[in-house]
Length: 399
Length: 200
Image (cartoon, each protein chain N blue to C red):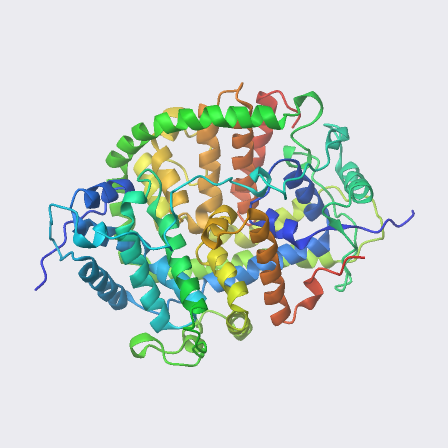
């Protein structure tokens, strides 16, 4: 078989994909490439490992410092412990510094949402990829795109690791491997924008209600989380460190497997990637203990560690919405980000208006984020894939 | 003995902000408690020194307090505040407060062991320990711009949009700068093989 040189996405696109900052067609294309390219997967996994190490740096200061910091700041703004000034303090009357954002404005959520000179339309003919295309088809499309577009495709990345430049496989059993927007189901940018505007207005109207519910729920949840944190902080740190290591082991297994020589241009070996997932899950399985914050929210709402449609009814799901969103938005989901994201996907799905294309896209996006974040959490990955495929069928798209 | 602060841990960020706006200035302590660790870590990453990070975090809280009227109370306080922290830290390192980074072997705050010892988790093997130290050294050796944008992403966990707002640059610039910073980090770690090849 004739060897076709593999073209790679730019590092910008690979890292943006890894950071969850891509959406739409571009995200699907990069995903398809990363799944099939050992070199790019190694780059993405390697960077993830480095950043996990950076995040695991021990604190430079302890609780004493933070206590002093609080007192010092309160002293500067003119507040004493337990004081009620009853009026705006003098300090707040001063003009704000330049380092403060002028207004809290919503920025686009992903690179693809950005307006401006960078915005380009990628692969307008992407719909040629049929709904039932298998892994080999995806690879062919990527190569064709490289030849015709050259937009994000760069020169071949030197395979200095000796890794073969061909796909291991692309899973053929889930919606992940297919573009969601194909054929007649393709959405136009104008339609999505218009639906987004309408949805923003609806969301704004509903936020006050959510806030009121949050008052009732967050108290118990946060208190429990704080208590548990206080009691088990060292143990939690130990578990977190262990979890990080296991995650890296799992990534390492995938990377090592990716470096295993296979015949040049061999046909995709069905189940290889799925096998990697299973091995990664095996390595990471022991690390599936929820964090204290996440566990507290689940306990408060009687939810299972991983969303399961058989065990969670709609009312319970919606009741937990504010707390789960709080966990995610406040950055407290930590190693449970994928699990929280799966719940958020289900919440969005429970409320979605099928005629609102932007809302439908939003649900799909949440599932994708859950899948990507769940790299080493097989239970979440598997459930998110199943639910995404189910949702795609539900909205009349080909999984 | 200082009077006890009322327990406001059950209130949302928005409720706390509304309390502060209504004159309950002490409620600000709860917002500090929720954000101080992330703020300090971010400032420390950018400035590389405890003294500078301490100044930056304190300044940032004062600025945030003064600007609370401009904060949308229906949004989480954390990301907004981290934007202020990062801007303050960037201003500080650009305004000449440029000093050598603290050595990984220098004693920690209040006589704590140096970082090189604190990362030495007995449960970790020596290879892991060595890798972490190498990564810390490589991070500290990056240019201010590269280190700052990586810190915003890794420690601040800010989205590209939030980073764009912090640095006042377009979203595409964030994307390319972040990629260059990561490449520089990989290069500093001797992993040049993962660098993007030149365009052909």
